[in-house]
Length: 112
Image 1: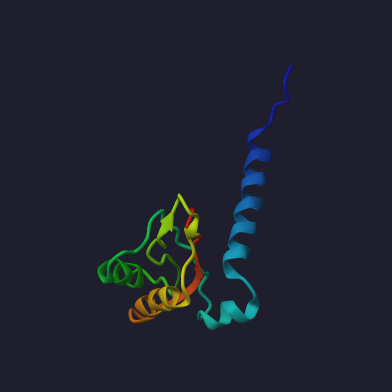
Image 2: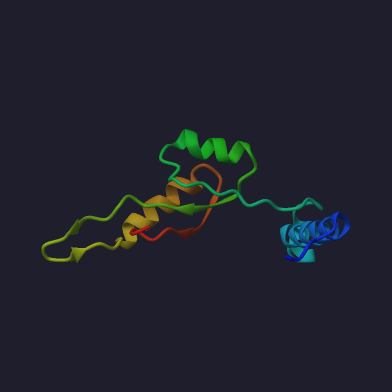
């Protein structure tokens, strides 16, 4: 016979998991105090916020930091030339995000 789990142990395990999730959302005590005692939230999307309107939508919902997606760098398969961003392309993406009052935390790799 297989192992069984009672309802109480299942609920206890769920409570521990929920507590750990809440603790990770709060972060350090200093970060928690900086947010006015509110838990933090992480928002994930599967695509680039291509327009200022999309970034404004994120801002309206309390998003302060995002992952930047500069335009895809040119890549020539025959020669293997480029395939990486120039500093100016990353800086342009950072400025686009900062113009909407948010910060760019990191950049998604071009092959993802």
